[in-house]
Length: 232
Image 1 (cartoon, rainbow, N blue to C red):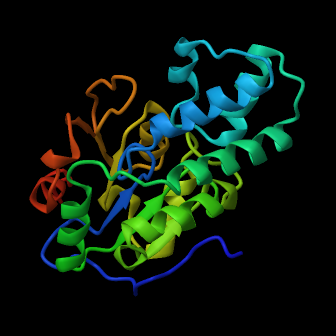
Image 2 (cartoon, rainbow, N blue to C red; image 1 turned 90 degrees about the vertical axis):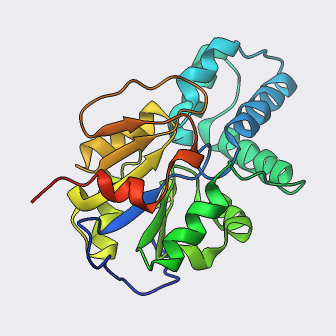
Image 3 (cartoon, rainbow, N blue to C red; image 1 turned 180 degrees about the horizontal axis):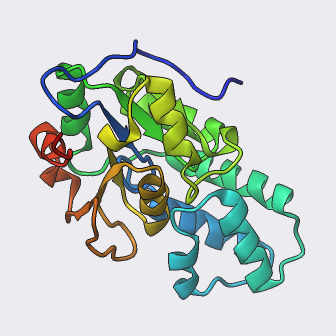
């Protein structure tokens, strides 16, 4: 499997300093952050362990290697990281097979970006097998590029996924607007030099330079994203 999946040609947003929009998946476009926690709780229950609800803020938004590793260490469960990753991915795939809720505003935003031919990428810490399943609901035609967490050497919170996406689209990271829902994803996008919109899903995210926090994706449209771009 290649590290990217192209659905559209690379384009630029004429008449705007905004060159591309890079979107997180879980908790940003699809309402699945709770799904992951439920699956983690169910898997560890079968292993004889109860997860502390306070750990949810630790594992949200991160790569599976980090979140699963943390839960193994925290519970002392007798399972390897590789074994647990398989169980979690299988449990998540089964859960989304019963229906995948999109976040309010997601369908409208994707349609608007497509209508204005804005280069758009999906950048997720989830594995490729999960992204490909979710894309059937989001519509692969909406994305010029998709980047999975198991296709980069360092995933979020490192800048690599967003730098990789910007390079794949042939755009300047500083002229990219990123939409994220977790502190881990925000850190990744900011480290890459992008302009960030945070739409917190599980834990609060504070305002900061190059970061705008909004309560819902319904507050985000193309005019809003273009206004984030630096002058000059």
